[in-house]
Length: 299
Image (cartoon, rainbow, N blue to C red; front, side, top):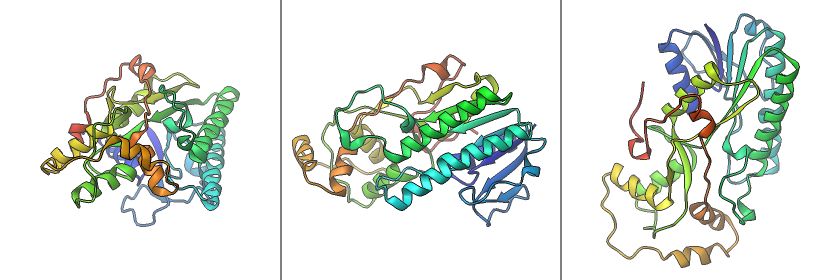
């Protein structure tokens, strides 16, 4: 089976390519990096260029992961990158793929493209341009799915964890490790997450059994409070739980009144973000790992 993966050098893409190689796929890896050692790697910045259409002939499946990662501080310049890569590049690649006879196109979107099952009144934590561009990309793909014979499936991962963390979780881990992170109170929030390896298995399941034009949310089936994540990090890092008085929850809530980056970070700590994996579970998916197993792997 001939398979193409965009965003192959990323946190998720790297693990996906690792498993596809083990499964014997004829693999084409696409990323912006020129430093990849794989002989099957193609360097292409999809924000600026389309893939050579000759590359797509004979490809059975495309897993499209390339995109601009979620950033808490969205600037005008970043908005333009979101539109170019998250929407335009996705649409262009799908059209190219359909014209080349690719059978299946799996787009790795984000839960930020939809709504959480928890209704929040915090207007400061809406999904922003990142979520909007992911949703617009999904809509463009669903239009293409209706007009062509190519099967299009969309995967929305929740917050992804694993041995090599990225983004906010990495920031939190580093701050705890260096002793900068304040001891948290019991925060009664809930957040959906998924281990990167469980996500990869879910992506392959969607490619095999997913229905054309469907969207699949991926979580590990458990919801985590920020306090639980904090205490699990302490255990994983073998750091003793602080005996000093924890930061009062009321103080954290009061700090959200102060404008600026601290305000936004605290709102994220207190936020609820819950999603249901019911649809992917109907395909037979069941996550094997939880956040306490962050450093473990499945393949």
